[in-house]
Image (cartoon, rainbow, N blue to C red; front, top):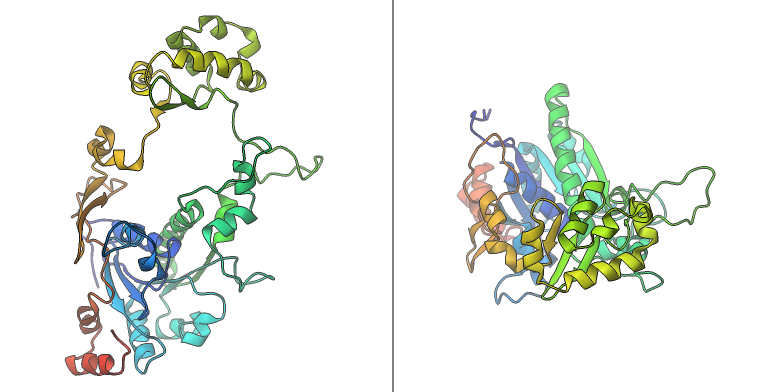
Length: 395
């Protein structure tokens, strides 16, 4: 039995099999690896399709690197002779198995809950689907932007009466990944009390709705289709300056007063016509025109420095600016990673667990990179491994 030390990460010793692809499942497992779990990414011979996504890197997919850090790689054909035996043996020794197969596929592959729990009653199985395992869309393919469109995100993102707009950045996938990680953490805690594993059923549909719980409120005495805009008016938002763009938020009385004082709009600060968020939203046309006229006097960076702690704000940066941003550096969120083909900087931590300073995670694995070592640890002999490779079960 593995006994974590006092200075280890929370999930030290937890063994996870990641059979998922694309973003939500793989990144959920990467978050668990960040917390100390040993994660084995199990891919079919053709690999995770995210490896094939467009990228300016000549030999790697930037998206794949970003969501698969800290894992070991095994390339396994579950349909080849011996492939099912391998996954069964690994599952018998694992704590968690994560997949994003459509309903019905795990049964065909022999990795359904009944089969796996017969081998390992303590196993936690986390299934991420597009729409859940029941209902008319259960077997439909679900993807981030499909769910954005379905659940109202794109319509809510539209400006005025304009066209619906996609939220780029796979926000549903990444939120789904967080739900995977937090749900597995809760299931591991429950297992410590009960001794039994369980099946966690998550979906991108559920993730997309959970992201919008503040919009997803319908009182008995109101029509269904009402304004559910969570935005607080034109003052809080992105504004042009003499150079660059600035986002600022001035919803509280204190921040509104500070904004007016710093921009020379003291008359607005004392006008009772604008002394609440709701009133300022009603008069956004007047206020935004005055505010932007003032902001045009200096660059965004100068305004951000001037506002400091008195007005929540930020220069509108590009993601590349984060590699050397002083706050990111101070929190040590970005570090060096390495794969077989590329050395790069990327996210290496996002939380502090008891002051433990973990080693930098490994870069995302090459397809099947650690196959022999993983199989040997599971008890397969050198002859067994050679036979599995001869049968094309392992690549």
